[in-house]
Length: 148
Image 1 (spheres, rainbow, N blue to C red):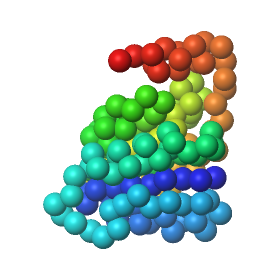
Image 2: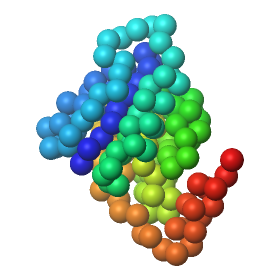
Image 3: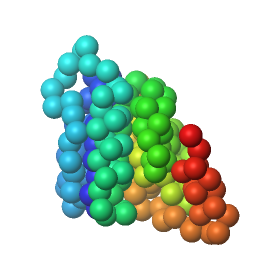
Image 4: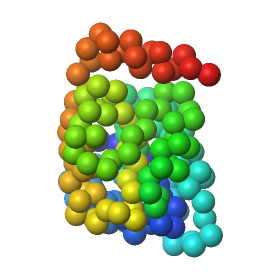
């Protein structure tokens, strides 16, 4: 699977850890930055890069992963783009519901509260959970895309 990934300084190490593990699993990883630890960087820049890349990719299975301190800023920034359905991966139930019901395409991880192993477990569950595509779920996604 093609995965665009990005993080600010607070999520940088978690991003680096995930890149290695996801590549070993055979995923195509595109690092949208930051490429070096910069304590003065800001999450909106990386959230925008990842969200735009996912939205513009011709592969409907392309996904994005973002990491910042709480995950809140990244999810807010990514969800500003039509067609992006970002979720915060704080537990198994949340990520499963976000994929099954909402066809989430960007996962935002709270680096301050999540160790690398837990982030990987959450990410793998999110990646392998299919969208149920029930008519009500499809209708709700269309309603989201019509919001301004």
